[in-house]
Length: 221
Image 1 (cartoon, helix red, strand yellow):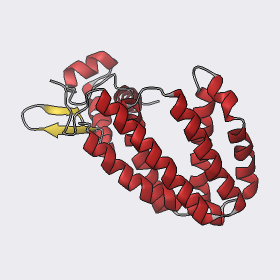
Image 2 (spheres, rainbow, N blue to C red):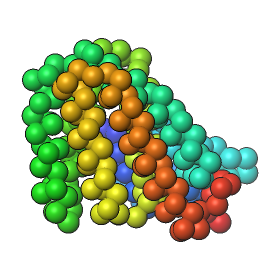
Image 3 (cartoon, rainbow, N blue to C red):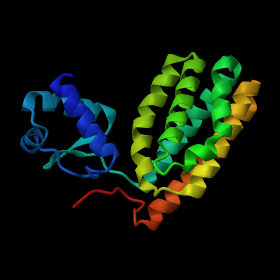
């Protein structure tokens, strides 16, 4: 792997996992020393992160981790609802049932996956379900938009603490979406996706507000 790719992956992971907080400065000298690379590949990595929307340039401060806010969470979910509801309905219309039936069977056993403290199996199931929907959509523009959005959603999810009750409810919501897709019911797939996203947003906003996240832009000092 090229040095710039390694730097990109490392910095991206640090941002998504909140090891680099919103507003954290990304000075070339400090980051190149921390990552053990020269400044040229670091610049390439920072340019990619800027394109992803995870890094921004601020007057007088240089490059910093992009801010996060309750307002931005709500805005992301507005776009997410439009894209994912459409994708689910298209998957129900166009998807290969033989692809979704095994995933449906796994969601029916999601309680066992959630019993694992790491929940890696459950998160992997959700990822594979998303990938199957992307493949079924048959629209490269929609899929590209969804994948770009998911970068920010992965970061936003860290605002919410691990909530076993919400995870169980989310698994049931995913089960209903999967059932609708297998049944070829586009309207049910769309409606179930909207309900799932509304519940997810409520949980994230409630947890973020309880944790002191303000409605305005959040930056580190």
